Length: 452
Image 1: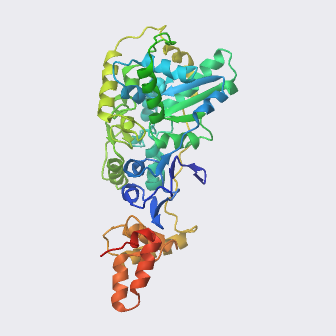
Image 2 (image 1 turned 90 degrees about the vertical axis):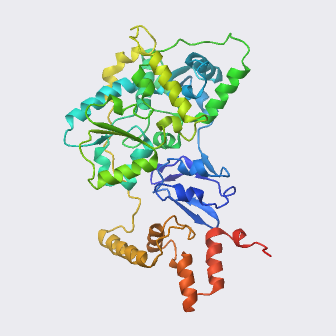
């Protein structure tokens, strides 16, 4: 699904949807409406956080991924693996086994997505020190948070550090590594195994870039099942076992909560969970917080360990990654696999930055300011007659969103069940008209019950 170049990884299956409205109630940007008994997405508001996906009781919300066979369009197929995939599997299964299975499935190379974290860490430290007038600076790691700020807190977009995440740096690194070995760039396919929908959207329509270096995405639940099944069924130890590679403790922990903030200078805070983030950004926008240098904001609880496409308990995943980081807390050998990224340091630093991040309006009442102000006045007038109960029976998540929908001529005030009762008492609205409105919102089936 595309809208004005804003790609979305979440799609709603109307055939499966039962119109329960669970998704509408949890959406943090009020991007969902119910019409004819089916949930509908408003693309300009959606940030692909996946909260709707978590609560759908009938699996009517899907997360897109590229066909796995797409990887075979390339001669050199690199799997970019986030640490949380490794953390989901038992500690008895070591990273080399997982790499081996991925190569059995068809990848020719495996690179951990956090490989570029060390380079990014130093670049972010420099950016924080060179921009003392902007506080707090906000990490661009979580694409759902970047989009949240774009659509809901546009005045804060200049606080986002305009730098690529470790994933893109790892992709650039491996692309350059293979090119150095004589491989043509068009023969290299970079595929990310993603724990969330927001990263799919970020790859398909990156913010601050025309095109991502990543060629495709594989959903983590799909990869997890493939890897686990293959390891369980494997009876022969004769498969190719790649060399282990070194990753620093800081890089291993980068995708967990406090993974970035613990590395930043000054006073830093880490906040996870989309509603916690929204609450904090509202305080920041209202200038109620100060003296903070750096903010690490993540959409999911426990950050990437709690991504919607992960398969196991996020707390166990985080625990395993922390244990792995402890065992990696040693001085690396300069010849170890993974250390060669330092040879590409200057190139990667030169390609870290992205273009200025622009706000995206999710509430565009009118094209011109005068018209928008007049419509905002009408929204406020409507709010005086609406009941402020946010029941959602009108098919909009809140009374405020219904008022905005009415002003945009996408709904009628008669959708409000409280307004219906008032109009019925005044004799200007019939019971049948109320029933017809409810059928329009919730579908005929919900009102077609044989009650005795």
